[in-house]
Image (tube, rainbow, N blue to C red; front, side, top):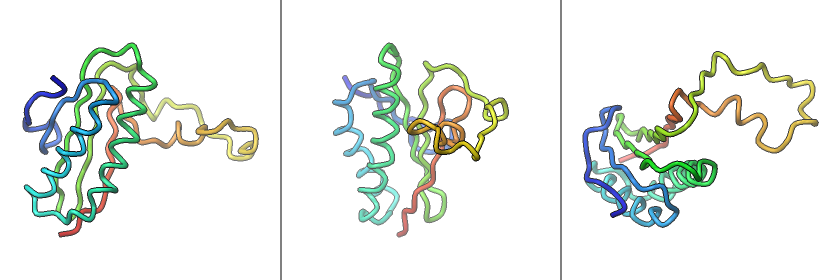
Length: 136
């Protein structure tokens, strides 16, 4: 089975865990659609929400291929916004306060994605929080 049922998420929203597999993306998309309907949010925002979730989910699957635990996705309504929390509990912790400083004077020498590593909003345990508009 790809998922377990919805639970009240750590961040106060609707959480579901999905197996670490690209094949779970279709079920995630259906789940997002249900969340929008259940919360009376404009379905026009579905594409943007799915794109955000898909990008993060596929990165967690791709770059942690040895992981075996499911990836948790929590969706919570915050006024006219949706808070998306994706948690991978099988990664090395990250503390943004201990990240090396970014040398902006050498930007042309950076490899692709170099800046994003320092400003990605990651928290300990591989947790990422993003906000996406979800107007009624």
